Amino acid sequence: MPQLDFVWWIINFFLVWTAILVVLTILVSNETSSNVDQLSSSPKITKNTAEWQWL
Image (cartoon, rainbow, N blue to C red; front, side):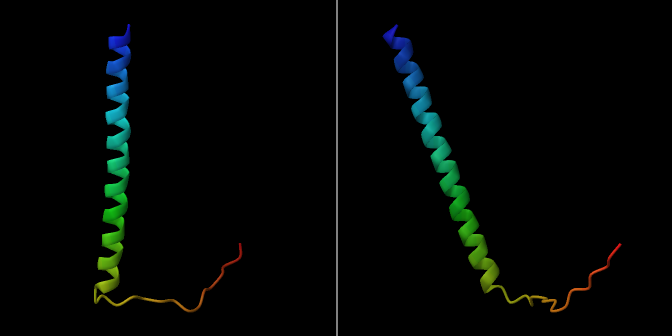
């Protein structure tokens, strides 16, 4: 049944490309959000000492 094979080829083709596009959009949105965080003027709290509590 070559017609059924062709339909499955089309379905797999679109599934692969939609997965690739979703991954790329997630990566691009993460890069832009990190750039926005770097440009924000909110103060960053840094803790220089660490206190360890032994049980």
